[in-house]
Image 1 (tube, rainbow, N blue to C red):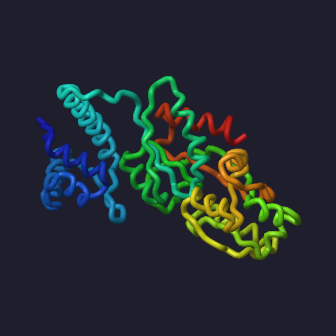
Image 2: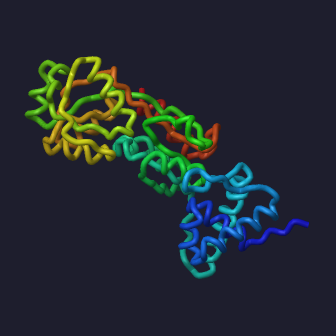
Image 3: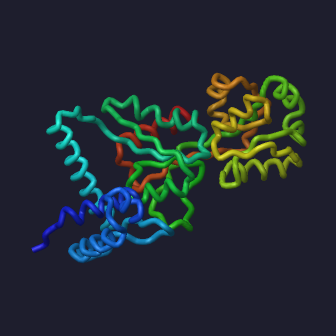
Length: 299
């Protein structure tokens, strides 16, 4: 008869939650060799592999995902029970773990996620910001319920994830007062030689902007590059250069930053995706934000 060793299961749960045996070793205060040995025993008991290697990280197999979902529930309930016994208040409600790619504008991320906070059921939102590839690794081991990104998952990545298009928007160009008035006349040709603030090369927007500049015969001067769009806007507000934002967020940018509109183009489209580990959207918070984005934000 199959008997599950809870100690082995806990080691598995910590490794799956943290993504590597090295991190689990630090958390559990055990050597990596000890943890590896315990995981092998658990896999022998279950009769199949629970992890596959993906670069430096471990990715759950199909069986691994199933085991993790049960283990996560078990140990979460165990923590709640311990809190209850020790007299600590329980944090009830739905936990919603979201990864936001660094290139996604923060104002847009807020607008996308806001409907989750308005649900009848109490939601505790936990946001993680990192490069997209790191967030997808976390999504693959179910540390995240959703990832917000400006590009779909590449088929070259060995990650089982599904793209849900939230919407698309043209681009608006902004600058501080005097700059905006100067570059507004004759837009977009006026941007030739202008100092511009650009997203880094890893961004889908960077490639779209470069293609548009080339098509229009415009050669701007790249004054600075940013992974963080909020930081880019702060530099734009300080008068360092021209920057872009989705046209859908134009009113929000004008309200928050001391800038003015230079011009707009639909030729540079920004697309935003909700990336989940499941083809069908089941998490109620994910369903709420995808429905709202498609009907209210990107119209």
